[in-house]
Length: 161
Length: 356
Ligand SMILES: [Zn+2]
Ligand SMILES: [Zn+2]
Image 1 (cartoon, rainbow over the protein chains, first blue to last red):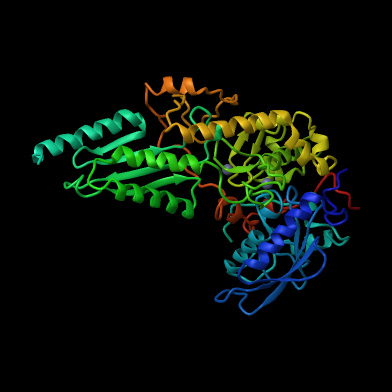
Image 2 (cartoon, each protein chain N blue to C red):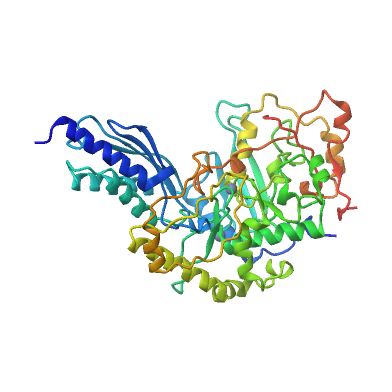
């Protein structure tokens, strides 16, 4: 029905390109602490290394985020997933999908890759238990055909973890 | 040498003068030695959509005033980053030195008004495209910008309009997955609200405050040639130029520039409308018509010097700098072991999914 479920199939619009180039420049000048952008020539897919903050359950662990930008970024949210193995966290599924409202319902075009990264790190840092979501297996099985997390209708709660 | 009483009398008269000049924008904390709060605004007068900065100044004199200068500080400000605040303070300080040992309260306020008038444009980057709000397009034209009346967040006009059109388009074509448009709420309530809230509302991309179509009407009217369906992509290559060329926009810009010039020339007494009290989310002014101000009219208005009363509880959100709640707040899905009934509905496949 709509193309919103195919985040990386359509080329970036001119607006999206301009905006991403600008974000890339700002990232290079002022990268968010704990993150490293792995340079490629693909503006539409960023791979970002995340280092668990010291003093948290994820200290000394490194993970990789994959960020795919849709044609109409930043009107539409990017698709953000962990490349498995994903961190063990009550809101991160083993297939790398992240349950974080700003990536879906609460996305706003004023957010940036950098602000997403900060939210994800904050979510990791505040975790008190290294465990998968309770419905992990069922969810992951349901996503087997390469479904994007943006197609999931998430149910969010005002939880600070 | 004047006696102590005479000097005190003079100071008291000065405080009265400040009150009569600034009306409700002047809050007298103490008459002697004078302690005042002044709500300082640029001389954009009756077009509040063209006001991008303001400040509340604190003036505090000691018993030795005017022999000793008063202390001056900025209590609150809107639209001014640190650099611009420092500039404002430096200008006032210079005036203080220049007028040393004279009665100077009014002169200091006027200096502040003048500086603010020169700085009356939004600062920083457009939150949507991340390029500076006040920037030339390479042909010597400024890109048009606007602010949302309810929260004072500023955007390039064409950026916010693209966002607006996107929201509208999403709600027409895909009411379920228009996730990015309106929702800071739960998916469940989003479904409930569908249809009732979309038509003429949007949310500020920065602070998520709801704004009405009327809030951006003064910008939307400029580009009636756009249709929502076309504006996202198809006209993209031309639309900058088209927008620049739009005659109405040129008129608007001329008016704005003329107004600014007038403000700078006329030490500021373009009388504002009295009832433009802005409370966030409460009062959304009618779309404004471009001001037509002749120097003569201005001169007449000088006979009644008073400034817009504005509630101190008015919008006090900073502009586009720094972190915002929208950027930093996040909610995560609840790890619900305790409620099994909810857990079974934690995620569902979208009806219109293309998968399977
Ligand atoms: Zn912009
Ligand atoms: Zn806002």
